[in-house]
Length: 531
RNA sequence: GGGCCGCUAGCUCAGUAGGUAGAGCAACGCCCUUUUAAGGCGUGGGUCAUUGGUUCGAAUCCAAUGCGGCUCACCA
Image 1 (cartoon, rainbow, N blue to C red):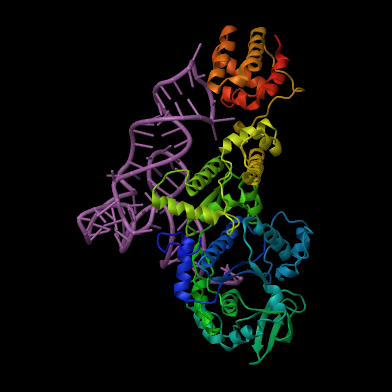
Image 2: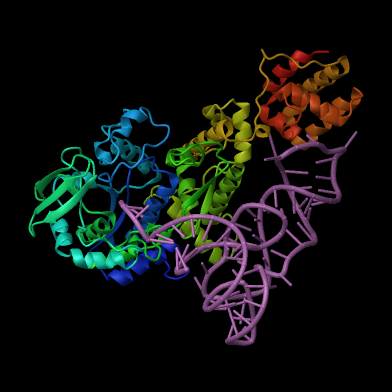
């Protein structure tokens, strides 16, 4: 798959790749960028930006282009508020207004607060086939890598102010400087820049202590550029060709608008961009985020969706509009949709050519390893059925796999992952009605009258005698027979059978359910009801 | 106030190279005496928010309007 990618009507990632090539010209190397401030859990909404870039990167590479995929951790950003549910909030409180890289990690997960958030992401991205080059802005600022950029900003202070003022309600003050300083006394950014000597010297006042100090931007670790200047400076520094943004940035008067003008001061050009919308969550229950709403990160989503389906969720959705990731019964539909897409890819389902092209591309981009697309479809069983199998085997994934005789070696790993997700979903998110477990020998037997016991006993006999050679339909005759021979209404007999088997009044369609469970299991459960 | 997104079947949503409106669930019906948020088959159901325009032809393009939501105008 390389040069036969269509230009029009293609996937949005392909269209974006074409646009980048068109607008940036034919280059040896394209740089695609993404980034975020790791000031809290990097949630699934932030992940949308990462995978958006990944998809465009893949589309460019499949056009034979070399691509650098950089991910900036803005860990020299300021610690603004203590997230809820963090240990030792009173300790963290003392670090407010310091850069997050200097805030301790009270969860003791990593060497500092920012790093803890970064590590979680860096560890999980390979699971979905994403491998960016990470850039750490705290380290870069503190080691004076951006001296030139900072000096350029100071030299063009008035121009920059003019650009920023275009969209401000209140213009920046006359004595404003395009640089911010962390106090060398307190590490906090409660400072005011007082003057610049035209070269490398900056004098600032620590507003908390009232002290003044002059620092040299070539040697101090304490200066950084404010966001609307920092972003374009880094575009120029890294030669960024593509970087998407949320709608907070990509709106009129937002930081993309000002940055695309400011970047010229640094001798660069604005990257091609695209806006992505936010992600909603559906059916998650009460997970609480730092801001008080529901939040989920990639780990949460990977618990119930396989990696390729996580990708599929984003690949199949236009970035420009909001969508919800479901943790409720919609999960079943998502799995069915993915399987459908897979069937189309493998030509097992007949659809119109246009639809087929589209679904094929979605399938390709959904795969974790872009170089290694499966040569056969996954073991396709309805997700619902997997849930039933898992509940029969009490969540034992290996036993379920063993019970399926026709799984090929190429399918086992994917099936195992899928079963793990299905079990996670059942135990964490499935509605109560959906859950059951087979009665165990030490469970209290259901209280029944003699007629009912006799009916179950008859059923047990039919199971032992006929279950293995009967079809599901044929066996259902015996179920009715067991009921009518003992003068029970069908409905009543179904009810007690479910009670005996799974302790609920309703359950999966009975004949098929008994067949799946198998003779031995049913026998051992019903043996307790000898009339 | 500026910008953006959404408004399609009862519900959740697909449908952007303009060409007879789709899926899943729900509903209804039928099927093996047949219960089920879990089987099979089938049926019904939409003025594609409103109004105008372009076009032989518009859910799709354009312009207004309404309703819902987000975002910028502080900071990042």
